[in-house]
Image (cartoon, rainbow, N blue to C red; front, side):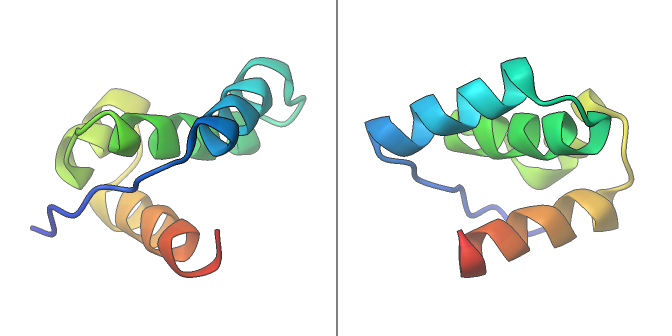
Length: 69
């Protein structure tokens, strides 16, 4: 299990929180929540369980955010 965590600046964290609170698309809200949980120190397996997605899905989105922001 990969245990790296995303680190966000305060501005990035605020932007992601806004996306989570106001995005109309459910998947965008899910992705924002995954990023916030990773920033808070949750591992990918825990994030997958909390959000209700498979572990590979959580890993994919967190890895993509890590690479591309």
